Length: 166
Image (tube, rainbow, N blue to C red; front, side, top):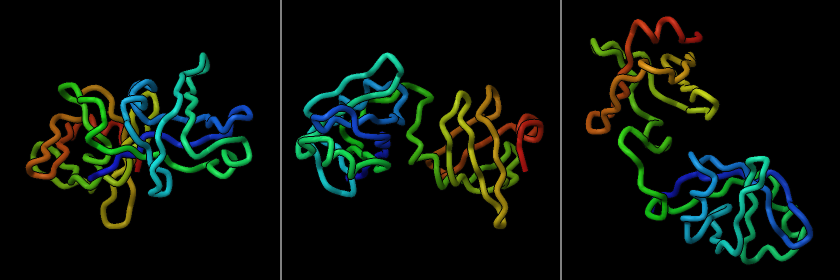
């Protein structure tokens, strides 16, 4: 089964082993849909989950009984089984599926390979070509098509040239 990166542990929360996490899902509540989460390939059942007023999420996992145990998870990544993920709407994709696609213009010019996507107010894509990185925000109109069948992310060349950071 393929796993998706769904969150990062920020720090322990309280004395009962709860973890404060930064979610990488569109909605923090989506983490609850995963039956099991994995940290360093070890499975953990979710015992409790809540979203705070600050937008951070708090998760309690079986096997992490107190603050001392929770402290060992600081900075760790939470993964979940792809099959447990909530269904995507039209035009939504998992980052893991975008990474590795060839970034090309509509005319077929290869701009590079997608290496990373940083989630900000506008997602920032990092592509690489010949050892050099180029960053561009996924603003309206820049991404024309995501073609998984042919392994391509098609962008509008004019908009790309205006916003890309070399």
